[in-house]
Length: 411
Image 1 (cartoon, rainbow, N blue to C red):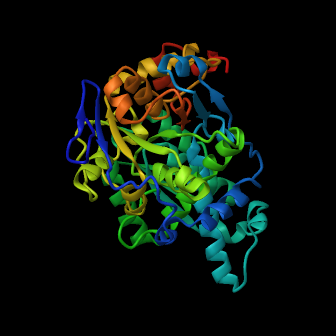
Image 2 (image 1 turned 90 degrees about the horizontal axis):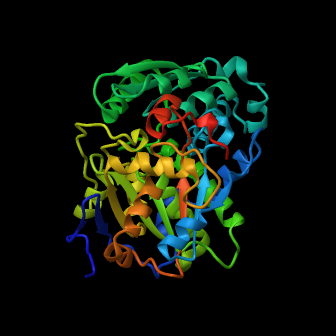
Image 3 (image 1 turned 90 degrees about the vertical axis):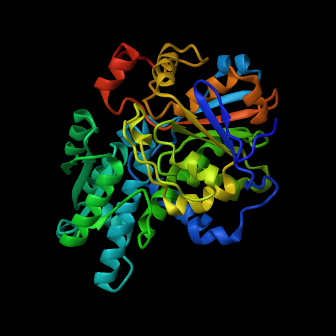
């Protein structure tokens, strides 16, 4: 049975919604250049690739899993080593901080300011009086805090009630002041915005809302680097046919969808977005064909994906470009993390965090459901890309879920 937006697939662990608007035969719509032009991603790639410590993250073949699923290949892009921060977020928040500082300094001096000079600390007497702020579940805030430390400005981070002490401490280690807010992630976003407006701080958010789009756009641009790296690492005549990607507010999947669309045109992969079932704002938005907010009453173990409100910029891309939306239950996460750690999916043991393995968990679950696998077009010719977006960003939580410390797992 072909599934449509009004006929979601339901199983014990998953719900699926196919986006009938996703035109597989369409090249990148020029109208979307106002949301995320390829030149914006090009600029981000050029800047980030010049940062000290930059290296492409590994792309690892999961051969045993591919054989079990009966597909041509499964590849896992491991973002745990990214700039020593443990997640892909280093590409977004820190890049947006750099762009913000360059904009402020350029305006002040009346001439373009070189980013190399900012990185070298030549403007620190001025940047130390600039404060950036953001709300986070952990990884984005760590990136913003790291960027502020690298480029010489102050940083205020807002976290909600359920963010772990381990993630809080990790941000404080980069010199950020961390403020805990009662309620969920979306409430921390609102509190950060209100305080920043009152005190003259600069919000560096990974989600957009009316009147606030420029910096979230730059955050997404930074994420596009992962696609360029993956395409360089894969054989040129074998691009992925599918990409399973974590949801959140939508910035990551929108950037990934956009960059593949820009680079591959009609040959772009089928984009499958994965969310926790209790934080399914993208899935519900796909069902209703418009942004839908979800009030989160119970936080997901997938902390970085526990978001209830869709980024408008992201939705502008996803409602036209993403093919499928899947929700999964928390109970799939720990077994998936252990499978990576034990090397049973066909690679050397890997460390994957709670949010980072969501796409892999969904793919494994889909593989046990021939009907849904057929709906998603998975067959012997499929080449599937997974973005392992984080490692053990909270070592204590990782140890509790996997049963051993991350540092004991040899990659």
